Length: 186
Length: 141
Image 1 (cartoon, rainbow over the protein chains, first blue to last red):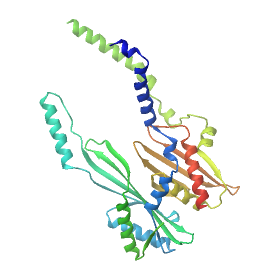
Image 2 (cartoon, rainbow over the protein chains, first blue to last red; image 1 turned 30 degrees about the vertical axis):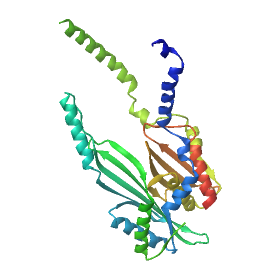
Image 3 (cartoon, rainbow over the protein chains, first blue to last red; image 1 turned 90 degrees about the vertical axis):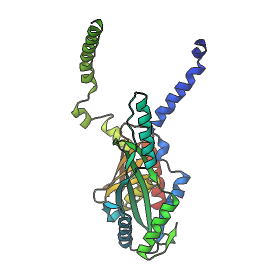
Image 4 (tube, one colour; image 1 turned 180 degrees about the vertical axis):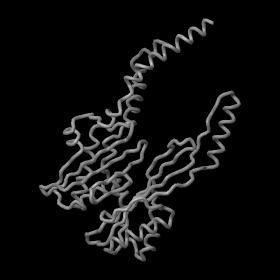
């Protein structure tokens, strides 16, 4: 049996796993490459409003963000930028119950287990308004969301970009109402 | 008794070994502040590109668009200083600072600096970022 593992073939798997892990722990060039999906995502995240008043669009967008509970962290009007964030609970009762049950079961075996669950999340949003100079003139508004979830031990359990089509649609519906203008998809 | 002696000997050895090891591995604060992984010129050439553009604000807007295309969320920007900061969240947190300057020659210089904490940047990330940026400069001017 021992001889069997002396064959070079058996060392390929751990070596390949090692290479994969090393790659996974690096920021790869393709993570900074524009791909066809980038355009689709851009379309999803952007709406054009039929007004050239960029300041009014920014003001309405800021008000909309405040309406949905975001606190404005930064703004830079010459670039049409607003950055906002909010902190909310990430506690899921089922996850907490599961972790506590696991801790009790492991405790019964004489070992220790420190239960860990998602506790808080910080959602961040950046919104950029840009004048549109093509045949469809107006002001383009693009919004991107991300969130970081922290555990009850202070660690990070999730850090991800957010954005289902519904989230964007709902945000732009609210912004349209705030502006009294019909938003057009790009 | 023997076990105690062995344990004490092991403890002393470990303590004795930890002193030189900690001296060797702990970098001085000065080295962290002024770290030079490569020469200044090398770093600048990898992190900088000059573009045939004239409008600095328009260039900054294209940088914002590119960063959003690449799944970054903008942290902040200062148009007077030409600085944009952003973060991309994946399995790592990639932070980027982009500085956009108008040169006396009438062109625009963009310098990007990226950091993902303990996660290394593979070779070619800056080239790929500038290639993406160039595409958007071409599209949006």
